[in-house]
Length: 209
Image (tube, rainbow, N blue to C red; front, side):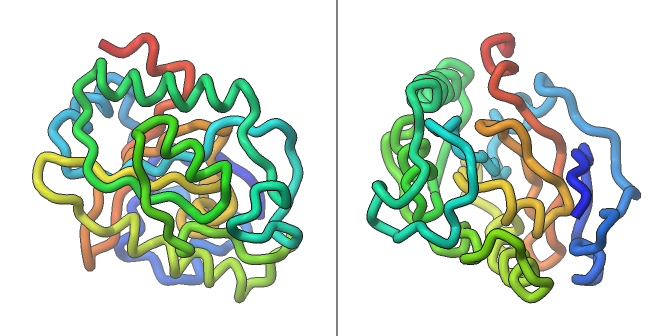
């Protein structure tokens, strides 16, 4: 799949095969800048998809990783620990209300969640499929697991944080989330799907007020 960063995309009416096409749909709305996204997050009612913070190394580990055994996986590096802590401090400083924090079962994801928010629950729906080169069926499986989480509305006045990975998000949206630590802001629509409003990159948080 071509890795293009599409800036906003409403998925409520898309037939499943479109999100897996080589060239994702381009009928997108204008992206919201970080300052506008912050306003939305302060009101609550959104889902934040956070790709885990930077790891000590790069490379696929979907085949070799054993859940619950961090020695078999990529884990956060020093930069990742610092970035995750800074993210949590930014949420507090900016008054962003957080409800549920859900991470994948991979160590780098729940480490990011714990360092930033001090809590999490793990959900395998945010995991990779165990392959480096995905089949169409595996991409569809990641898509179908993640889309309900992106579509579910949080309690009033709160935001749900999902801490996951690049490939499942790309399978669900057609967007490759980069760099590590990027946050995509999602307006959930329940049975109607969801809308991606825009992204906040790690370096953006310090400039928000």
